[in-house]
Length: 107
Image (cartoon, rainbow, N blue to C red; front, side):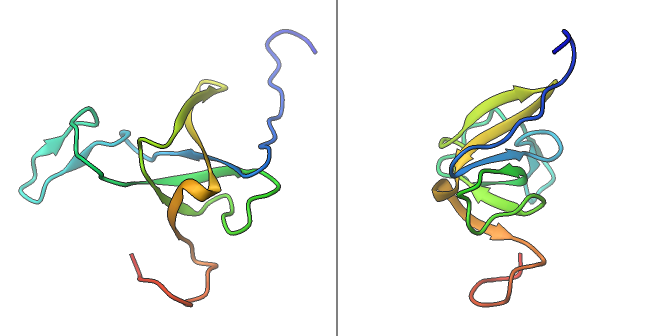
């Protein structure tokens, strides 16, 4: 393979690759104050969009939004983009149009 060419990436086992949309972790308080991503908030979960999944992932598909604990993640740079890598079992919830309304909330 020639130097500079990009190689395709395949996720393995139960791994899920996600990307946090927008400014990673930045949010606004109810009063409109901007809270930077570096501010420590104990036990606050975050949403991210699924980019790729491994062959053993059962309920998550690319394009889904998933809820996860920011402490249970690995950061990785792929082709100049920042992503997070985690296991399916470390995800707490999924938001997707394709899921049936079995049990859950509209978020």
